[in-house]
Structures are given as C-alpha cells and as structure tokens.
Image 1: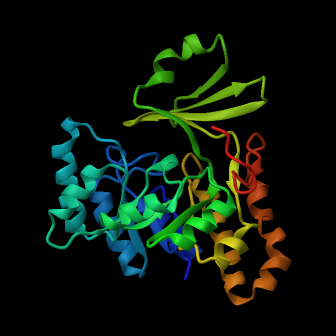
Image 2: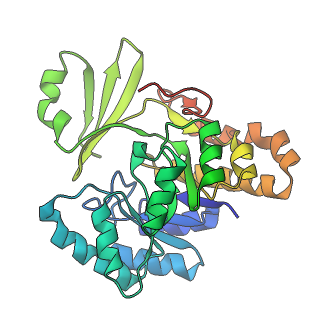
Amino acid sequence: MTELLVTPKSINHITTLIAKGADAFVIGEQKFGLRLAGEFNRDAMREAVSLIHDHGKKAYAAVNGIFHNYHLNALEDYINFLHDINVDRIIFGDPAVIMYVKQQNNPITLHWDAEALVTNYFQCNYWGNKGASRAVLARELSLEEIINIKQHSEVEIEVQVHGMTCMFQSKRMLLGNYYTFQERQMKIERNNTNNTLLLYDDERDNKYPVYEDYNGTHIMSPNDICLIEELDALLEHGIDALKIDGVLQSEEYINICTAQYREAIDLYNEDPEMYEDEKFMLVDPIEAIQPEHRPFDEGFLYKQTVY
C-alpha cells in the first residue's frame, strides 16, 4: 500500500494531519535535517514519536544534513537519542549517519535522501546494500525515469508529489549578508516574522522564496509541484511513498493538501476509473488557497531536465 508522507509544523499539527489521513511524518531538528517544515527539539521529538505511534503511524527523523568533523560528536549523540525514542526510520544523505547507526544494537532502518543525486537504480541499490531500505528520488526525474528506477530497484522508492523544491543551497548565509548588494540586481522582500526572503526576477517574471536556517541559504522553486492529477502512473507501478513537502507553507495549506491526496489515493485504490473521473476536481480546494504568484506545474515529470 502506497504511503502518504507529510511534513508537520508542530505537535498539534501532527494530530490534525493524522485525522486528515497521513500515514507517516518527517520530523527533526534543523541542526541535523534540511529544510524542515517545523522545528522539533528533543522534547518535541519524544512527544511526537509517542503520539504518532499511538495512532499506528510512522515517524521518520530527518538527519540528511552535510556534516563536518566538528559536527560528529553531536551527530553521534543525536543518533543515540533517535534510537532511544524509537523512531521508525532515519533519513540520511551523509555516510557518517550509516556509521553511527551501525554501532547500535538494533539499528534503525535508513532512507537515503541525497537530493538531486538520486537519479538511477544503481545508486538506490548501492545504498540499499549499505543499509538503506528506501531511496528518495531526485525531483528532476521524468515519469519514465521514475518507473524505470522502481522496476530495477531493490529498495522502496519515494517521490515528492506536492510542494516547492530547492533549486540552490549554500552553507553560507549568502543572501542575509549581502541582500543590500543583491538589490541592485533583483528586488528582495524580507519578512522578519518568519525569516524568509522573496526574490523578484522581473526578466522571467518569477518569484523565488528564500530562507536561511542552521544549514545556510536555500533558494526555492518559483512554482509548486502538483501531481494530484497524475498519480495513476505512480500508483500503478507501485511507488512506495508519495510525499507532500510543506516547507514554507501554512498548516492550513498542508492540511488541505493532505486531505485531497488521501482522497485521491483511496479513490484509485478503490477504483482507478473513479479516480480518472474525479481527479480534476480534487485539485480545486488546493487551488483555492494557492498563492497567486506560485503557479502549479508537474515538475520534470513530462519534460527533460536541463542542467
């Protein structure tokens, strides 16, 4: 059964998303995980995992940062903590995580998430042999590539179906330090309340969300992926997990997306023809709250990626 994976913003939000039909949750602390929708310190992590397990759902800890030598002691301690609270899976991109997990008596299963690097089934199977049970595919893959990877992979496959994607990351606070200089080239709006920036690209008529956290500067896509009308091929070929990424989105927005994708998945499982008939209406509640400056697109599902 395909899993609906979501990114909650708080403990209370998890309760709401459980009611909306989420199967699994990505939670963590920004010191170790990249671009989290919500910040969960250790107390919140412990409470969240207990809540999620009480409802028969799964808790995935994001530990997919890139770590330097000076991070390693803290990383080891965090891996110990995640085993203590018994998260279901650990999301990683750095092999250091594997080394610390292997030291445990009962190692937690791993999900390999190296962002744009996850582009073929040899990579998926290589990390599968190292202990990963799932590969999180790059967002820049076509439907044909996704299906081909799934057919040849020995691990579970996860695909993002909704939300913005990261186009650029720097470990420096690049824009925060130099936004005055950048203003000569591109208009910038800073929101001090939620620590976000918005770049205005007049030449391409795009607006790029930007935010800074412990891991540096992240420039996000000007459009939101929305595949609620394209789920049939993914479900038909047995993609194991469909992710809604709620970074920089409101709780209300994530709630509505979760409910609509839950209905879409259930419709397809009940009757694929019913899904075909109704899928075009499922997007309506999401479109009603979609920001005007962020149009939907299908990512690279039907077009070639140009690097």
